[in-house]
Image (cartoon, rainbow over all chains, first blue to last red; front, top):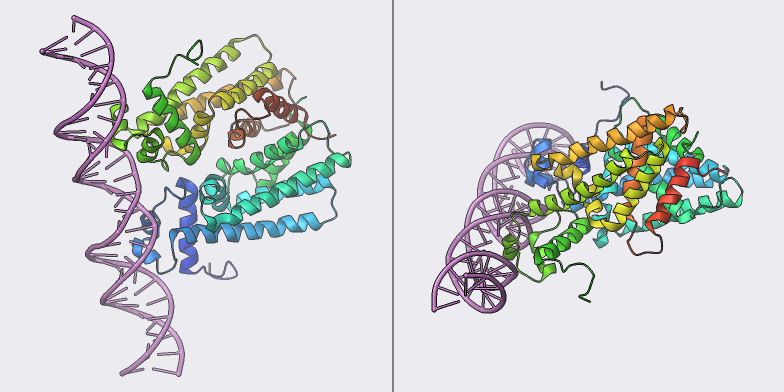
Length: 197
Length: 197
DNA sequence: TAGCCTACCAAGCACTTGCTTGGTACTAGT
DNA sequence: ACTAGTACCAAGCAAGTGCTTGGTAGGCTA
């Protein structure tokens, strides 16, 4: 059990993971520092030995996750795939993120709107703009190259795509019978070909 | 201004509408009774002349809305449309609900998971089950009749549909340039035919 | 053995929460 | 004039909130 697996997380990382699970489950505002401490088996004051504030916990969680996610997106953008190829690659990467960073995606989905009211979380709005630019650009490229149909409102298709991908975090459970790749493929089939016979 | 329009809402109804807007905007738990009272221009204690509790406000909002929505769904179910016809009719009715009962839909989307932890809101879970039965039944009927393709996981298509419809409340704003019918038609086109050229 | 570090506890402070209480002013019906 | 009902205010309580403070116990290093 101690061999070549993960390199033994620090107590700090353990606490962060516990907080992530609670934030994801009941929301950031609705999770108290006492909830987190109880789940970790310590008193609430002891958390402040490891973290500055409750805000800084969720900040670290979201920032770490988003940085990692965008590393993948940037690699896909820089690849030589067609527009449609990039779209499908990004959808697959996003479902992978739902699988591997379930709590962080859930927190982002449920609490981003609230958190962006603090200037500390301004980077969330910035990332959203970057995400929109990426998607809308790819959709327009796909239409221009003839890969995608041209009679739809690109802005609306973008919202449709964005929401359908990320909202899956509400029902997808890591470790279930469906792999992220399964879900991504079915979603892409519906999206690209429709459910008409 | 006082002629044949709406029949002059009671003070109680006004307060309920104010609360609905705040619940939708910042979440139920994250809205205080003082917030509601401030927005109405009264003191927080005065709210309790009209309502038993903060919970009973959101209860009344959700129950009224859902009862009305299901009246429409039941009429569609009882019609002589084909399975696909019923599906599209229900999608359109749902986008109409997002238009006419924006706050209530937003509250349901954002806070239902939290509210169902109270037995008072057990009816929400029951309605969700009913909704799932309706959708999955129609999808299976559509596959059986040959209207819809048979190579997709019905359960997954159901979740996809349910989420894509209701999550639109996050960006749709009543009174904008897009009518609910416009949005519903584009969504149905993507869903049925896909975005492939 | 001294000094420092990590990890935690016990107590509590300042503030916010939903809700209650006892009261006032006004209106409408009888 | 009497009563009942509506709509509100002023004050405050009990519970819970994030966070701070002063302290302890054990381990590591020089």
